[in-house]
Amino acid sequence: MIQFYFLSVALNIACGLALILPNRPHPRQLLRHFDVVLSDSGVRISLGSLGIVVGALTLISPIQGDVPFVGDLIPALSSALAGLVLLLEIRSERKEEPTRQGETADGSGQGQGSAQALPLSDERLRRLLVESGRIIGFIAILAGIVHFLFPLELFL
Image (cartoon, rainbow, N blue to C red; front, side, top):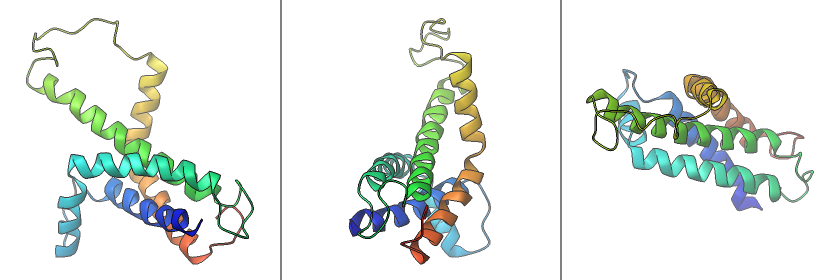
């Protein structure tokens, strides 16, 4: 469907900008405005959720005349991955807030124990994705622009 094609392009670019722009000084006024909007946690949660959903729907519903499943593979994966990184960043920011104040989420000042701790491999994967967020953002923007310019190319 053409609607999912548009959403895929728009969300790839928006999620990519959300991963690249925040927490950097910007010489241009327009970039400062984008930075303020895209650093809001509600906007980041919305973009992340929509990125994952539209990434999955883009795989299911290709453009008419395109190869099913394979035709939109790179934009769908980059959109879903950028959305996942946005959600993981929000989760890690919320997880770090209580520890900055010397307390945990329950307010006791002590940890909950290892019952809720993530396995080491999951923690490494989450940290790797969050730390490489800028690279994933650049890939998402590039995939969105190329997907817009060449709509019926294989893998784009």
